[in-house]
Image 1 (cartoon, helix red, strand yellow):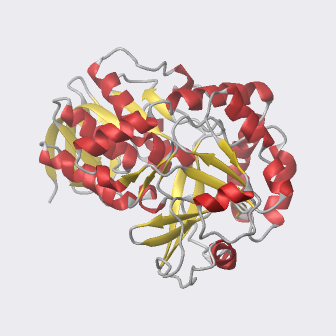
Image 2: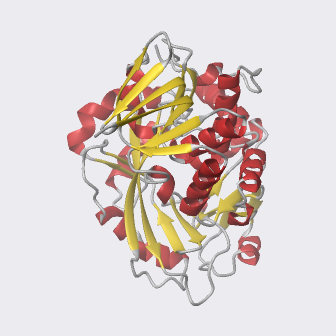
Length: 417
């Protein structure tokens, strides 16, 4: 038997973006319902590396990237995988993505990403303190390490973009690197360190903690898959498998699953999925690491979390329907042990998630083209955790009619049409 309810604002999707948005709207005095087909942090937010990298400015598509694609695909431990059965579906997205590597587009996208992430650390500080979760946030920075001169020199374009857009970083020598992380194998020659970055010791606990704080101040969570959203003179009606929700406003935060729902409100958005995997290991008995660290040449991360060391891998293009293929991330285990010799390499957990990505590396934040009652907030690709509270604050201001603290034109839904 289905049930029904009413609210001022319905937020669809309970990852970090949706949970942050719902909490901030409820905190502002609105009656908010948060709905998700599985519940808070059941999707992509669960399995990430926990990094909060403020003032980020490097988009994914850079000049000359296309030259590296064949070698990345051929490297069985490299950063990119493509299921060939999905090639015909991803091809239009890939063409647009590579076109975003033109110099003028990189400059535009870098500036827009930098502006959006300017307040990420401050927004995270506010929401973690308000929800009583600040003990889960550590100010330990974001470190990338390179075991070859060639690998480090390959960062020159990214460093030039960071320089041009006032993104702070430090270049670490080999001795500096091992002063900072003595548990690392002594094979690494260079490091790039973003000292101001934060780290979440347990992303799942953080997202669920914000969801709990949301309910404690009167918010409502519904577990249901939204199948259709309609609009009438009174507002919006969202219909799911077992629930009907009437709302004055709606915020769509459904990540990689946003394309079809956004299409109901006039948006043809080239959203696709950068699938990512993780493996969990026990915390080493011997020397370990103090912060998330990227193995630069192989583009995977080791992150020392409450529940053990998490290894996250880079990108697989295979869409939302294909099953997981854990073979590739398991091939990285010897490299993870090479990176951190005290790691025993015994698998504790393995997981697949879906990063919602657009060709220009920017999310969609703003009203739908068809209705001002509907606000979009999705497509954060690798920066979903970083930008969750920031996006929530921006959406809150849209819903309340506050003056924009940030021009949202670069993130508009119809920018690709």
